[in-house]
Image (cartoon, rainbow, N blue to C red):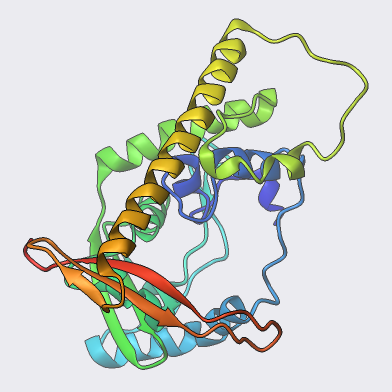
Length: 280
């Protein structure tokens, strides 16, 4: 199935502007064909996630005693053909589903307590709304060593907001009207507009104001960077030959750093490190 033709569960967080991995503009550029989406199928985390999906489902069944079966590949909204989803597993004999995930041990904090990453909450609620199911289970294998599973109840109000966001987004795709660029789109702009034409485009008043603000912001950054360096120099002068200093709120260390690396030899140096005390 051509992913350009629909909004799926892995897209909805970007549509709503809350994805860590993709902005609305980046998703819009992919759906309109302005840029080709990155092929991540050969990336090891993705490959391992696919390979371990069956393992995660099997462990969930073992832990809960509930059987699951593979779901049909695609579900569609009854009225909006571009609103679709795929589901990993259906829980037999129920109106429930199971989404299987894997993640690095570095991301374990995202799953502590009752926490579930926002992108996955939106994905599962999207699946529940489209399939007409009431409860979603999400199981995750963390770092290949820790297994967790949690429950997500269908939120009708959230699904309504998701569908409204999808309708608005898809209208922009059809009309080829790009969403507003965000800070995370700065480096992406060269992918969206790789060539420069011959003409100079006349600026609107909005852009004129934005340019003025940009220049003011640059000047403020230069001033702040200068102030930062002056303060750091003052702190280093007070520390002198000592390791650091202590305040009621912070521990400040000016620690030695060896200059030699695998490829470059530099002089030994010192790094200023400021740590806020717990409870301060």
